[in-house]
Length: 174
Image (cartoon, rainbow, N blue to C red; front, side):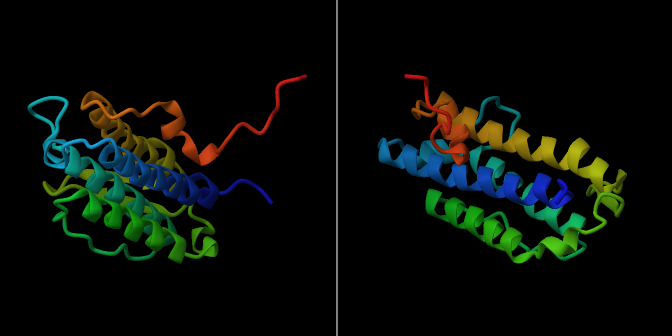
């Protein structure tokens, strides 16, 4: 079996959204101020922490929907707690898992139109959309979420970002 658009998208989105849920648990487990974290920003002109998770969710579910030719579920941006943000991540994961792998057949050549509220936008072939826009945009918001938590003192490290890998699968020579 060859590597497909499905392989490059759905499992990647699921792994990062799952990690983000664990980061929220870690922040709460360390006794961090949830209200302060929810409002955190790296710069005054950026959207707050909550929006970073909402936009990661939107990026993932939008990409899967566009590539598979299905409708994404609507998720209003109303989350106001870590529990609600974790739930949004889970609903996004559940949606991604609900889309059959076969729906991605031919997605690399499927036309994808991305329109912004001002009417401008982009037209892509599916493969170009995934690699040139969807994945970079998704990881921008995932990384910003991680950076905000780190900036607020949550003890996250690269193993938390890459937790989907699990422990190393190669042993040191004895």
